[in-house]
Image (tube, rainbow, N blue to C red):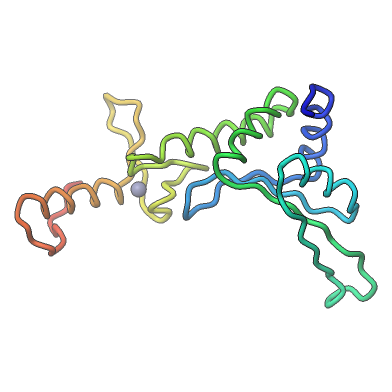
Amino acid sequence: MLDTKTIGWLAGLLEGEGCFFLAPKTISPVITLSMTDKDVVQRVADLWDRPVWTHRSDKYYPGAKMIYRTELYGLHAAGWLMTIFSFLGERRQQKVKSILAAWRSREGNPRVIFDGKCLRHPDAELFQIPSSTTTYCRGCRQDSANKSYHKRTGSSRYYQKSIL
Ligand SMILES: [Zn+2]
């Protein structure tokens, strides 16, 4: 049963031990928890209805403890991030905000800006047009020029002329 106490407990645990990030290829939120305390990880996995994976790191550190890990992706991860949001500290809240903003903007949107770069074109330059507050990505602009050139001409050749 999900009550405020449980949500607060989970938020506190993830704040310290969890990892929140955006999977760059799928542009999907991910939450992971890795700990040596099996009962704690199992409790979270039960809440999330997810399995627990184990691995031992004694390949490098002889006698090392077993590590227990569970993780959540996509829509469910986004839902849990929203659920625990108000219990998180400022830094984590900022991270969650940018993860969710990028995730929400990905559908039909070529430009998904996260951590100061376009996730589809991490090497491309971002820029702003002076009259606009929108951030543009040169890679996305080139893609859309290629697409409309293809539509117009039926040619599968890339639109070579720079639009930028
Ligand atoms: Zn881009």
